[in-house]
Length: 328
Image 1 (cartoon, rainbow, N blue to C red):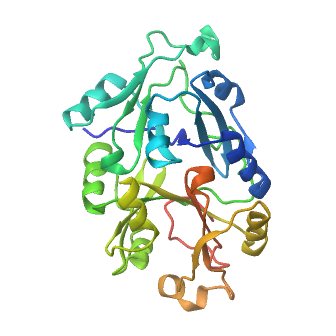
Image 2: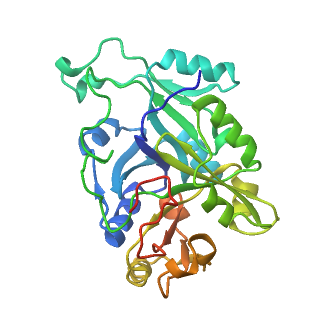
Image 3: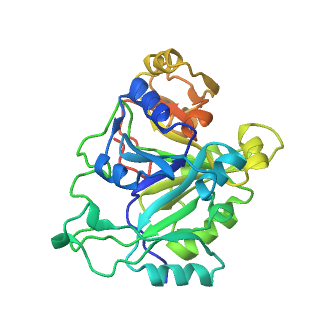
């Protein structure tokens, strides 16, 4: 039986300077610190923790403060990057056993004293530890899995995991997390078997697919993972796969005004890694494409944020049914 994860809780990212990552996103997009009580609860002598709301997603920036542990090891070996995606599951013992039967071992497990942030009247008894499952080589990130400590609903009553009913900052909901892997089909088969993931946005993925790179869009709960399998020994995706192994390359959002956004990014001291046009007419029909659609921009933010930012404008004034998420 496949594991059924909750909607995404947060994306956990190891960086050199968590406050600098937050300030950049605040200055450029109007991102906000969120879940501050929870972040303070996790903050310790081992790591600085900041939760940042951007669009509909929570970015958990981790700044290691000691030279040991999985966060420091990743930062020291590969530089800033996405460490894990975090989800809730119904049963930790059953989930961990299922993954261990598939050859996935825990990277770590740890207990949290939830009573520091949750009143005893709302807290379940006998909450199992949080498990970090070592799935980086399989899917491009580790999986942090836990059970909800609450007696009631495990997810916030707000529309988004940020704790808000509105998007935070001047971006869309997260479009996808883009990852580079050596075999996209093999990665999909693992996610499909163990989490019931499906190929989604197939027309969009086929539009992006080329002799240069195999592209596949796969859902994991409410997240779209854009798996990129380089077919040539060149380009940013190949270079990252060759140096870091399977890993997150960028996170993608839509912005309303690319010119204003890029000016704010450049004013903040950051520039494009590259930009490229897309012939949207091939995907949605030339009659639906609005004039002067800006190229897609891949912003060089890996060292600062632990991922590049991929930004694009919506290519049409019409409602388009091409995304898995509910954008417009």
